Length: 474
Image 1 (spheres, rainbow, N blue to C red):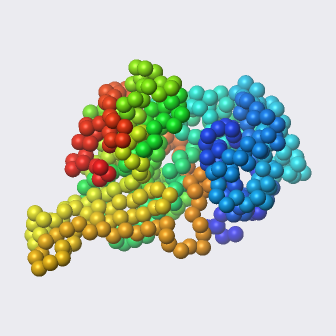
Image 2 (cartoon, rainbow, N blue to C red):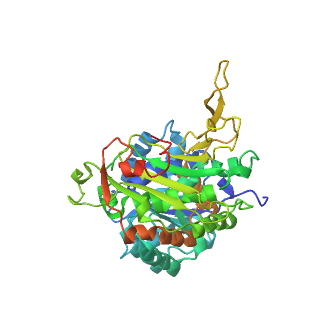
Image 3 (tube, rainbow, N blue to C red):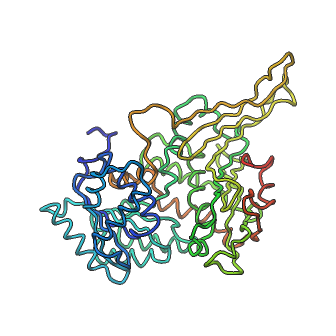
């Protein structure tokens, strides 16, 4: 195996996968479908078992498997019965909680004994899909029961709720595992379209030379959501859009857009480059931030009638380094907005030209980060006719329609495979988390007033006015 190749399928060590929150929404929508697709593609280890865990039992193992079969039938197209039967045959459930994980630890050891005469040959993958308040006690239990030995620990956002709690969480992790064992998952980074940002920029001389403050006038990272709470009122009341989206997904996207050439695509160099961006970020200014709450939010079941939780955030951010000094980065996200999208737009400065003085306009490069990724370039071209007049034209590259030997992996599918391989490249490192919270903390210390906005709109008027010239999505 060469240095650039990574182990997959039968080249991977035997694994015990422990999924906390195995009966929850994320497991049903993403984790088990991801495992199914990996199994169908032959990317899982030859020897593995999956132990679901949680405080409440879903019934017998057979009943749990039947529940998973029903859910997978709804979420996966063209199910292969043989693949599904093999996957489910490896699944069991063992109750546990932060006070008592002894039965779970025994189940893990028993599974290892069945897979290998030497349990030291078996790796463990522990996935914590649990509420933020339960994270630290559960991590402590894993340490007491030694479940993290030979293990990789996957934790879901948010990584704390502010700077102090994020540091407490990191300390709790370091009490039981090394940083090399921690996989802080941000599924946006597992998207093919996000990784294509690096390919388009660094592999093409057309773009890299102009990717700086001398030619770029602004950057917009826009992730509006059309859906409302969808039954997540309890989570949102304790979290809000700032913690749920800005301190995680959108800031990580900013890091991908703004980083210097990492030289290599690996866990050290790529994350060093992102970390340097976050170190250069200016702490966020409450005066250049808009919090919003969609009308009717307080009528949702489980929401306080006087709630000041933000369901919308728009911010202006700056990266104070030589490449980006003075270029505003505008980040926006919210629930119940006009439409859902995941778009990054780089706007370029209007050329200093005399031939078209007063008529030239800025170009834009727009990256659509959806499951059908596209890149659109907005250009000024001549309008048809006898006169030299300018109009807007577009070039669109549909990156999902190209012919390839490999099919694209869904984000969780890709990231689960990376954990099995031990590849932390697309996972968030502790120093990144700490610096991002330093940048975000001013908005928690001096919260902007929450402004109402209509469902199906683009948010409060103050947010619409935040970027000079407005938002590209409008």
